[in-house]
Each structure stands twice: as C-alpha cells, then as structure tokens.
Image (cartoon, rainbow, N blue to C red; front, side, top):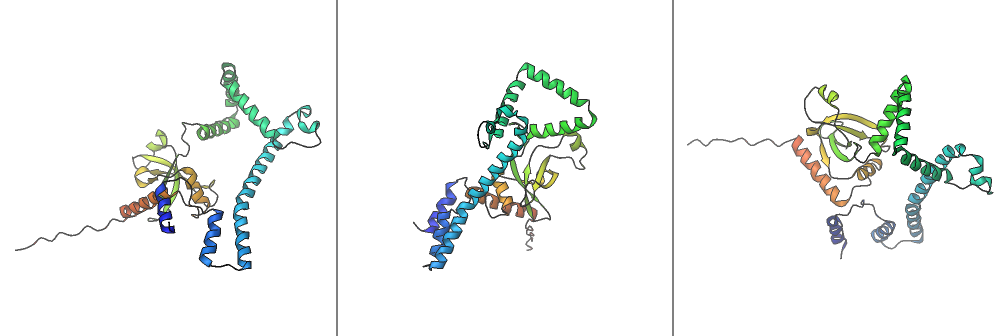
Length: 271
C-alpha cells in the first residue's frame, strides 16, 4: 500500500490522536527523501531522533519533579519531626509531602460531607464573612475553585472561533457560561451572549476575556485539550484528522458567511 492510500486511511479512521509524526516516521522520512545517507548525515539523523524521543520524556520528568518538590516544600514543614521518614532514614523520601497532602485533602472532603463537617465549615465561612478584605477574597477564590473542579460547572467545555483581531481573521476561544442576568441587561444589544476566553500563544494562561454574541461565533467540534495544544504549539500540532477536516470546513463556511458572493442581477427579456 503506497503513502497516499495510507494517508487517506488515516484521515478516514477518525482517531483522536494529534497528527504528530513518531520517531520511527521521522527516521523513515529522512532516509527515504534524502536517499542513501552518508555516515555524518546518518549520525545527524540518529541524534535528532534521540532528541525527539528524549526531549518530551525529560520535560515531563522535570515538571513532575518540580511539582513534587514544590508540594514537599509546602507540606513537610507542617509535619512534626517524629513523623518524617528522614528522621529514621539516612535519606529523604521525595513525594512524601505529596502523599500526605493527598490523604489530608481526601480526609477533609470526607469530613466536610458529614453533618459535623458542614456545620464547622458554615461557622468558618460566617467568621470570614465578617472580615472586610478577607471576605471578598475568599468568596472570589471559592467561586473559581467550585467552577473549575465542579463536574456540572461552567468551566471551559467548548471551543469556538471569533473574528479577531480584524474581520476575516479567526481566533480560537474557549467558551464557558453566559453572563448573568444583571450583566446581560446592561448589554447594548439584546441577544444571546456567551463568555469567551481567547488565550495567547504560547502561554494559554494569559489572554483576553469578553462577552460575544452567539451569532458572531462558530462552535468547533474539537476538544479543549486539542485546542490548547494547537495554541501552545503555534499551529504546529494540529487536531485529529477528522477534527481538522471539520475545522477547515467551518472556516470556509465562516468565510462565505462573512463575505457573501453578490447575487446575480435578473435582466428581463424585452420582446
């Protein structure tokens, strides 16, 4: 089976994997496109192949190590010295603070689900509600956490396209809940609005937040994870094959909608 048939089969398979070549495919493409390789070129190919394999593993391991070290630095000072493993061992156990934090948060959630826990939580929130500055800070942070971690919340669950920064230029946005009734009543035009967050490249934690009319956006049938990878990679990591085809079709539909073709004039025949 030639490469064209393999590509057609890949597009029609409907898999959710990103169109990123593997290390084996990189070696195959570099050897087949360049023909027979010299010793230096072959060593160069092997070096870049090893870099492709080791790079993601090293970055992932570094992020995990950084997270474990960060949590250990927060939790271990709160643990009494007799309960620390390094008190009895000649070396420290990395991740012990992370395990203690996980067990503690799980136990806290279990206690909060009961009547006694809910009563104590209510008393604590009433106490915080009497503090002028802490009251607003706690309420805002609590709403953010409830929105992000709630299964039925209004966190980012859909992806859309809006015209930004100029007409005819489309940007990816993450869609969440519509504005509240008080905000919607102050909008200059009555209509169905939706909250949209447009992340920046390559750091998606910063961006622009705005309310956009639903008629001015196009929902894209790709996951939030695929959209985030597309933004962070500046378009180098494309969505899955079937989602990429749908995205191209939606972009073409949006272009035709924004710039419709002029309707032909009807000329009456005079006899």
